[in-house]
Length: 178
Image (tube, rainbow, N blue to C red; front, side, top):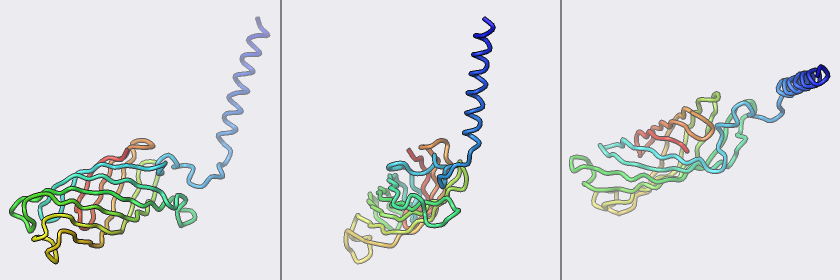
């Protein structure tokens, strides 16, 4: 009986020491300390919009990494392409007529991971207004414009985060990633 206890105790101590030793070894992978917040596959987000000229709406985006290790050594960054679309409703007291406008966007988004909870990003790209031609520049039903923005994410876990974004022309956006 004593030999069995000694064997089990010795095995447990050896397993603990080997686990502790492997955890203390340096990791050669860049960005390993916050790898769980990075984009794995496609990171989707759904958001509500408080737009310019009194518009309100909803939208979706998909972030697809195109430079997953980023551009700057020693900084945890990542470049992604972020296509999506927003649907806005305007009331009759605004510059736009009552009704819906669809605004597809394609943005280049540069993500900076500050720690395991926060990431920040600037973005730039193109947006297209699709709606009532009488209220769009040039009296056409389509209007292409430059889009810019910046935002932050508070990461709850490796896939979900609270998203806050301010951008032109779509306004303030608040949502969740999944």
